[in-house]
Length: 231
Ligand SMILES: *Cc1c(COP(=O)(O)O)cnc(C)c1O
Image 1 (cartoon, rainbow, N blue to C red):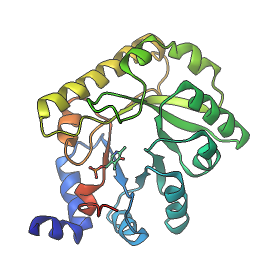
Image 2 (image 1 turned 180 degrees about the vertical axis):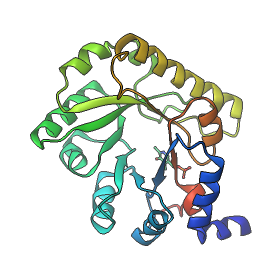
Image 3 (image 1 turned 60 degrees about the horizontal axis):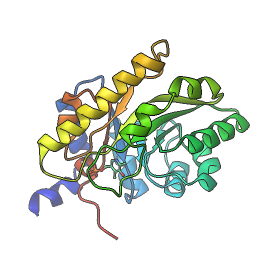
Image 4 (image 1 turned 90 degrees about the horizontal axis):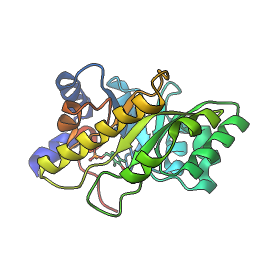
């Protein structure tokens, strides 16, 4: 498609357009997976400072090549044997999908003498393949007790991926569900916790709906860099 080809060559322009359309309080994570360091640097030069990768190895190797003042978010499933590398390279792990993983991150962050901000990934989509806590699990867990037992991992909010569908009614309902869960958790367990404040939802195809439903972080790849070449 002509439009998409044009997109690929105008990273700065795409970012400017997005920022003009976006409320200033919403954080943009530029998702650089499959992109070259040069493309990522273009996004950096256009003003973005928060980048996301879904694989630890790709995050670490890109981080090593790019400016030091970039904040890196891990947004993909994290295996426990890669936690050490994830904690070393990422400031925020958005894809915490079990309490066990949260505790491993906590131990590793303590060992490395740092604080790792974590988001709890919640399964809100229809597809079964997407990882995360089920709504039932998230609702039944005593997050207050868990948060109190952590030393170096901080629970900063929730993350979710909506169904892969053009049906924006479904997508909006999923975002509403996630925002509702966030508010309930904040009220019950994090009322005195100022860092529990993030709802990471919205990608290239649905960020506007997500922001309307209260998103504080959007994770955008295609809209900035163009279509990903499928491997
Ligand atoms: C790839 C990815 C994104 C970005 O997707 P786009 O549709 O390219 O904006 C956002 N979040 C997660 C978890 C991803 O894996």
